[in-house]
Length: 222
Image (cartoon, helix red, strand yellow):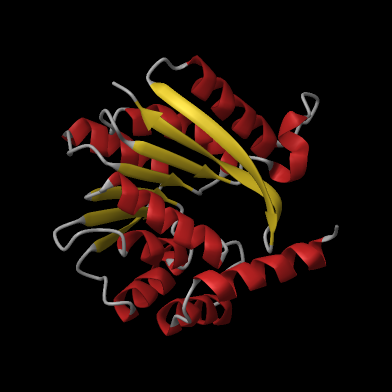
């Protein structure tokens, strides 16, 4: 098997399980034209996020790593009419593109894009005592995952679902000798998942249009 076959299989699965979506296609096109990197989730991964948030019955969603708002749109579509989604983005240019994509999707009244350092923003949420989130999607810089998890847990409640993307790194995460900061960050993240009695977790490898990677899913128990 090779990546061309993985991509072909992803295309087949998306064709058979998802209807054409002009809004999402426009978001990808606008992101590309604006020079954003093509590191958004694949369509079938976006649909999975939407389904997980729907199954959770999420009313408040937190996303770390907005990029062009593609995954944001998928997640926001899972919310009820009175739901809210806060998405954190480090770069103003990315946030501007995302806001336009989100507005085109008719979700500007549901989604707030917050620009700045994610740790500082999360610390501010904790300090201000904002209500906990029902669903969290981590898709920001991987070396920051351990600190993000520590803070996100302070913004969670029993039943909160935490999904973290890109936790396989083409298998490098299994290499204890790796000096890659992203790999080290993900390994520390997994250590925290394993050590924390509040979390029930699993992780899956995936292959497809995004190569060899995967995600973790955790549920906060108390």
